[in-house]
Image 1 (cartoon, protein in one colour):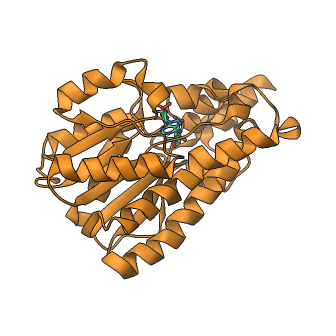
Image 2 (cartoon, protein in one colour; image 1 turned 90 degrees about the vertical axis):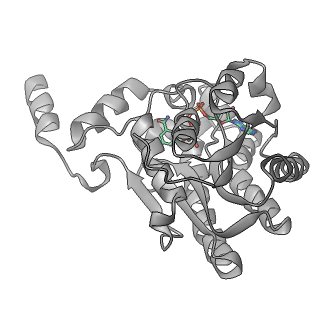
Length: 272
Ligand SMILES: NC(=O)c1ccc[n+]([C@@H]2O[C@H](COP(=O)([O-])OP(=O)(O)OC[C@H]3O[C@@H](n4cnc5c(N)ncnc54)[C@H](O)[C@@H]3O)[C@@H](O)[C@H]2O)c1
């Protein structure tokens, strides 16, 4: 159902790889709510060609950009404003990748060059995106910037290895840039901490099925789907959340406030 929440708003959506991607769902919902936007992803991710289907469905143009490259980002923000005919109202950063996780390195055996790549791709890129937006004065007043995080920023999930540090840094960047962008331009900056979700990035983490089921059993509302995450992001881009900034917002069906649940007790009782 459409509420026209983003009517007349313009934006950039990073990170739609395939139909399962959270960014894909956000793009579909943003379109439904009346937004106009540009889609972007790393040039290497374009090779799969899936994003073309999304671009067609949303009547959006695609501008490739490696989010770790300031030069690529400058080109992206330039072209996006040209295509959309003005400044931007929203940006979604839905980017995450750890070479250490991809290659199955454990926390005690991390490759430090890859660790730096993890931080650059998954966290510093968020700073770079806002830095370029600020330098180009690309955001409208009361604009909204959202990045996606995970509770491993606060709690220990052993298989999440260096991504847990990337998420902690990402949330810190949201607070600090939120302060700066709020003062400068009334732009709000938040992270949404999402439940485990069956996407390419999500299922790449070791033991994913187990912690997906565990989180589902622990959460009174169950795991939040990618579609419901998209709904939440839309509210954060809309004018209904103008005074929300510098926050890490839990979108997890209640998981983060649970100690133990009846379902988990029952499961453990059955095992013993
Ligand atoms: N899936 C989950 O369980 C889960 C839970 C909480 C948070 N998140 C976060 O949600 C976000 C989106 O992930 P997803 O689950 O939709 O998976 P996804 O694999 O569909 O999306 C990750 C995206 O990051 C892009 N990317 C990687 N390197 C890049 C680079 N250098 N420049 C630009 N883009 C690059 C990929 O091409 C891909 O589109 C990530 O930040 C992820 O950490 C995911």
